Image 1: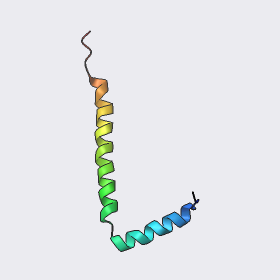
Image 2: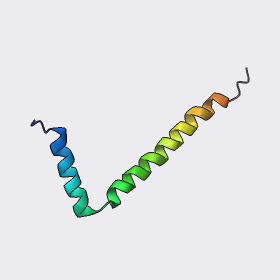
Image 3: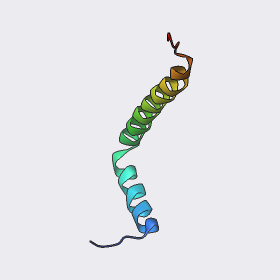
Length: 53
């Protein structure tokens, strides 16, 4: 497996983003934000669950 420096990877990613536009990147960011928000809400709200022991 060949090692690629981070700067080369970022340069290639920026070049690909210019060709494709920002649609795919924004889609991924939105999906991650929604899933992250749902996870954080679940994590915070599970502490408020009543324990009927």
